[in-house]
Length: 327
Image (cartoon, rainbow, N blue to C red; front, top):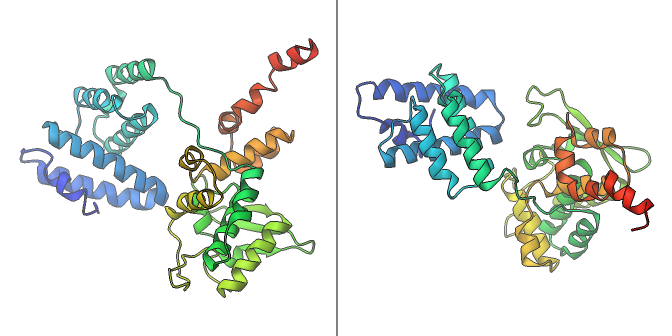
């Protein structure tokens, strides 16, 4: 069902007699997607549609079904203040809504596609890259962490994230039983579900010996023997049951502040920083593409190329030619 913030806007979409029917359709839509997508995707979908519903209400537009003219106006308005990638995501969410309700999809209109192209030509498609938590940064943050229980948790979280390239939702979903220590002190970690594995086929990932030691310190100090691997820690030092995914980037930023990193570097850290940084380190170490794809569980090289574009540029044919020409 629609959440409390979205429901009022669903009820106030239009003044037509079909309003109640449209609201019911939207209610069924939200109920359907709650089990069809990952929690993060569902949350993003709800947030995107809330933006569109509120905008339509404020501008007196009909949101469901939306016309191509309405969507073009929305694109032009949002494109003046939002990143092109964000606007494109809004359009994708609106298209999902209409397809699910079996309504004519305004995003299929040639005029809408041209509006998106105009936005890209005016503002470009390039997305801002988050700061990668590379090996030197990872070590600096871990060494600068304090002696509190929460610092032990933060060290373990960062170390596991760097080794596994896990998304924040995947990190906080790990259980203690998912970690199996090997005879040499390293470990394997079972990731049961993920954004790209909603059916739960699972993936087995590697943890280095130093990471396992850091994790065992956290488990020992927190008394965590089962259940969630990473948990919230209250101000009084008591351990909670669940760590919200939204806390992961905040943990990275707080560790970076404690380590004395520049403000612009801290601001550029995000939940994906522990996916970007290890990829950059792998490229710098000459690790082959198939192994990088396996580590990040990617099916194509697109994200690897994006994360490592500066390093890859320095290994391009032009760079190799310049080196052989000694210039």
